[in-house]
Image (cartoon, rainbow, N blue to C red; front, side):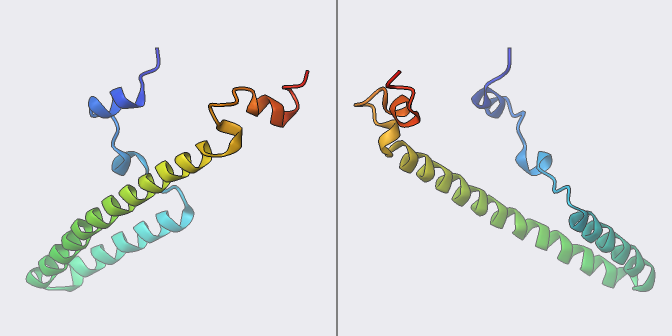
Length: 109
């Protein structure tokens, strides 16, 4: 039996940040470029300066966590509002259980 989303969330089996990794060539290229640059800087800079760059990278990643969380919340909220709007359409009104069938022409058959 397939687990429900609520069960997966409760059990801690859903980690969007780890599971939703961009698969575009641009993303992979950017990752490769950043990795190459960090490797080059680690060789060119004195250790103390390179440590500062690593700390800066860590702070940027930490800041991104907050931005990503807010974007997720905002997008999730928009999704809920969209669902509410859709359910207000005449096709989904509870007062007319055949509304969907009528609209598609199946209600008259």
